[in-house]
View 1 (cartoon, rainbow, N blue to C red):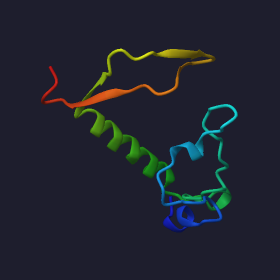
View 2 (tube, helix red, strand yellow):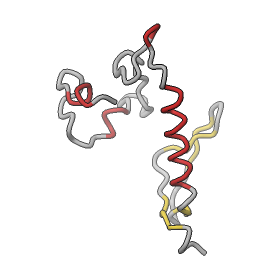
View 3 (tube, rainbow, N blue to C red):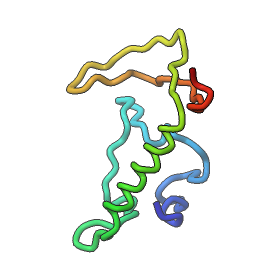
View 4 (cartoon, rainbow, N blue to C red):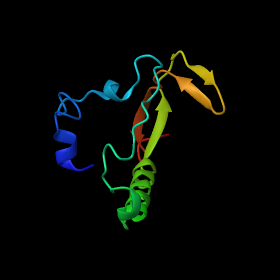
Length: 105
């Protein structure tokens, strides 16, 4: 996302503060759907960035590379409840410990 877009106070008050709840709808508790035109990182429409698919693929490769170096282990004694819909979703947060693969047994 482009820095000026994120920092605009007209888009988000207190834009510099870490507030993940700003992306969650308070009525439904689900992630808000945001128009592709609101934060035009890659632009949209006929002038869309030609490198968008390459950039998104690189993000996936970096994420997969990072995840391959760690072992995720669920925190014990969590109350895990599911939201049954088209796909099985976990209600609320799901906490995990992140352990480097070299130390994982």
